[in-house]
Length: 153
Image (cartoon, rainbow, N blue to C red; front, side, top):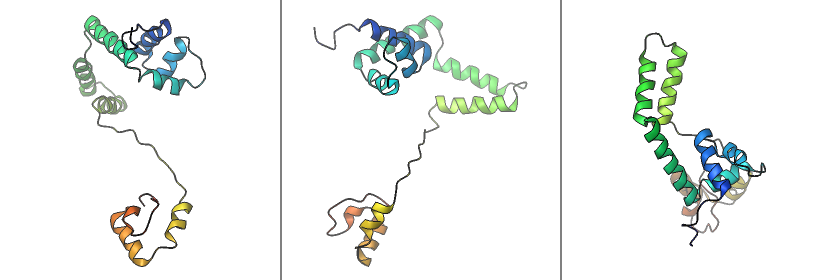
């Protein structure tokens, strides 16, 4: 039997059930009986296992059929609550934000800070022409004679 046809283990099945219930990979992994060490990374791996993903999709599909709760229904209900006269302004704003997330209008952003010391050291030996080329393109590889990429500025 190939690995793609092999049935899920008892723990993998428990992970699938818990993931459907909790919608949180780390918590689902712990609830399924896996180690509590590094659950985020392990859940990430589990959620990239094609067999596990297939099982989650099948369970979700059955759940939608059973409950008749579709994305369209959720969006419609949320929109009704947002537009109801008796809904407080703070709840309306929260509902609008939730709809925006559901519909993919918000992008998760992460701040990354980098020390510029390395970049400044690389720039010190450049000529004015090389600095102009770098400034106009933002690409360190555009500098003639530059062999190491110092990344975009």
